[in-house]
Length: 563
Image (cartoon, rainbow, N blue to C red; front, side, top):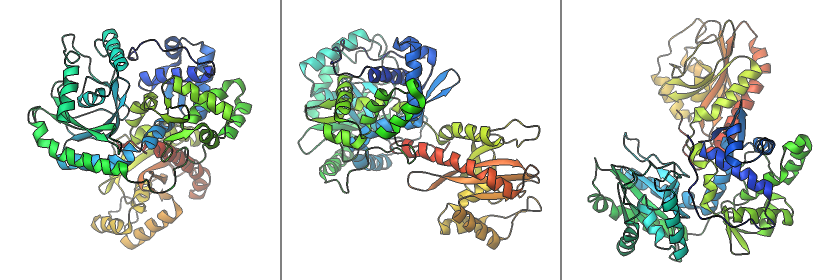
């Protein structure tokens, strides 16, 4: 089910310098995001009103950039699309500077804590520290809420102009049930949140904090406090969310406001502190994916009309922003992207017209609206979901089953798997557990542990022989694991089961830690160990590198769950 975008007054006509292909490409991305990151191509044609040939060229360009995949008749948002939202989050520096303080507050209070920023007449989340409970906050980074449906909105609306209030009333009249905000439950027809919103804004102004008494849905209550910069401007709101089964709306302020205010003071200091280190690179694209001007010209030569260069250039300008690059003049954007000044200027004017940038005429700054381009859905991806398409490509290449596992205690647990079709194949289901010590993925995961932790695990593990080939001598196994760490792969030959040979390599997160392993399993009679190393290992390493590239982008601001 898809949802219409929040209704607003008619947008002004595009300026003469606007780049039409960029506007059309962004409309396709918005509709794809509205469909939770997956839409039939035919639906995109219908909802955007664009010609099928235009949508096909847009999707071909986005696929070349790594922002979408085409799976059968569907277009699917790919994790690399998150680099657009990452550019905004990095440029704002709010998650980097304030996120650790929000996480600490959540741990201390044992309640969910959020950071939100204003976005038009809505509120958009930029950081979440949630508690794992049956009833708790379930919003994602990038989710947009109506200003009147929550505690932060009353704080932000205090700075609204008369025009802002008119736009809000227009939207309320056109969308009385909040159908344009899929992150919140539909509002009942008799709901009076709008009627009391102006009074709540006035009360928040007087109190210095805002209360949400089940405005989002029954049972959820929240308190929000503004976080201000050195100039006294409210840049975001810090919220604590609870449930009425733990604290009532009357009890919550007394319970959390003292620690909220202390954290807000620390956040103000964090915002005022000078940034350490040089500006970050213009894009967090992984190595091997350089979407710069030269790369785009080569893509145009290869794909011809199926690559819309002006669309790619426009999206590239968004990634010019980042940490230490919150506000950029035209010259800096052109230098960071390798684009001609005139080309960069037209892209910036187009993006400003669409609301993804704001400008004072000299400097450009990203707006939180960039997060609407699929960030909320993609930030909720799990590690297995990130890995699945790459495992499928690996299986198609090597014609043997491929899997991903994580370490769970002293065992491995299968979290993703793509089987191959053979008369004789390895049959393993998701959730299956095996001891770590006699498996290729287990050895990769054990080898990735700090030496002391690895030694401790081996000391408490009963090394039972599962086949006549199983290594059970602790010293020999320790030496094997050290060699696995050095080599970057493990080959296990008939130690878990007679006739089963398996190769595995590690998957690293942004910090370099081993968070998972991927493997290819085959029957030992199909090839020798040397042949497996020569034919399977290169493909396996390429798949792991592709998974790491997506994890590098997706894990920058989102917590990627292992299951």
